[in-house]
Image (cartoon, rainbow, N blue to C red; front, top):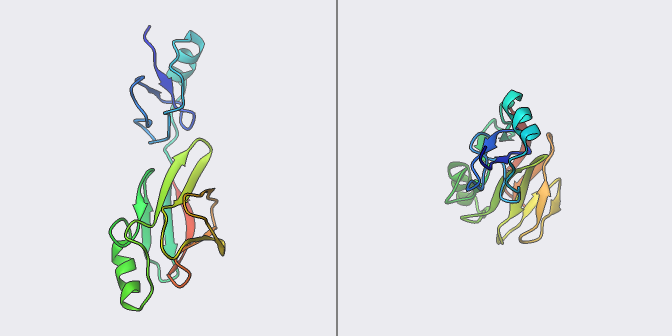
Length: 153
């Protein structure tokens, strides 16, 4: 039997060339290929759970649904919301923050934004990656719209 990578998030078998799981888009770049028959049997009987998607919800009901690796900002996901903020003098960077699904959950990384990414009122340093939990509060510049983190299946 050939080599493969088993996704730690959902258990899907992937080819050795894959860097992201073909089912849930989890990071498998660090997974060593395996041909272990026990792992094969386990992977074949395990039905992957539907991957949780990340949704940011603003107080006005605006929603931004994100997939792993997606970027949020004025020239990225959420642009329509941040363009309105910009007209009111609130500045969110063109490419402000990246969201990733990794083993065990979702993370947010500030992409050297001009006015910062705030998680539960604490500013992330440039390049800093933080784990997200349901109910966390996120804002992208101190005066921007505040979002609540939610996970959906």
